Length: 401
Image (cartoon, rainbow, N blue to C red; front, top):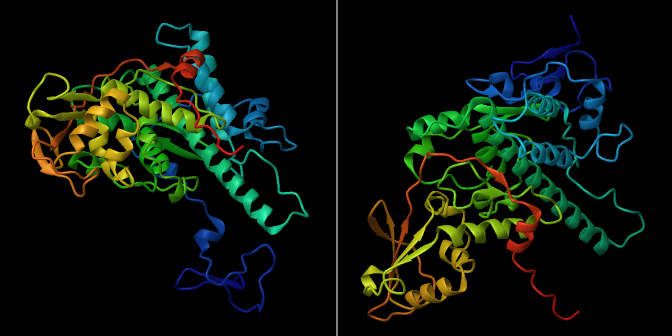
């Protein structure tokens, strides 16, 4: 019998030897599973359909290209670059593309199985230089952490849209007959990446929104997956703009195109997508549009603002108002100078908790209503660079320099 026995509490502890050899864990609380096993979610595949399972064996040169560490001796590429290049190619294809091009894309995404997400993979910079003061070291650590978080958001945003395009090419568009079938489609279409498997629903809700509040609505609350992934974003990266940055392909998504996200331009791109979405989807009713009375003042917002209202911190209206076109901002600010506002969903109105803007004129107040969501789809296109540069919000000037 081995001198290392498994106890009743499934801990790995020496039965007779006073010390463990270096090859075994030294912690007395390490379980057998933690010490020797891995448990990726693809071991419980369920109904997920692997979109990049075309090749069981990827050529060695491709594996080395995508599987190595960034800047490492094995010559691998940054996973962010690999996913971005595949997404750029996928945007050029559709159902009428040549078979050779479709095969080339499928071979390329099959190699994503060999991407390695090791510790620090998303950091663009290298290790800290020695000899720096403590304050400088702390500042550099914060910069490296911020860059790593940017890398994660960039890669998973691009991977999400790459999976949307793959699902449409391989499976066809999602069914538009019901919300249940739509949710089933997004739970089924999945890719293997970096040692695990992610469905579209898991990429959105268990990675990009991993620590965000659960969305409102009974349908979403009961149908969302509960998988947990090691590379999930930390709580400090929760960002309500991500809800506008992801495009599922529905005609209800205010914009018809998405950019290829990059580390260098991520902040501008997130702002651009939120402002562009609100510019297209936000409508004003009542006074300011058709001369109606105060009771008819209504602010119409996309449905995602209802589902993810808890994402907005400190408040939804302050975040949305700051990103509306100037004329709409002026009108809504006039409304907010009144008694308050109401929130409407499906034709109903309810009081919002808390007020932003204060005021108290007897003719004031307005209603917030949400546009219906359609399960019909349209082809997702890439936002070209010239169009993106025109739409990006200007950078704030740096004062005192």
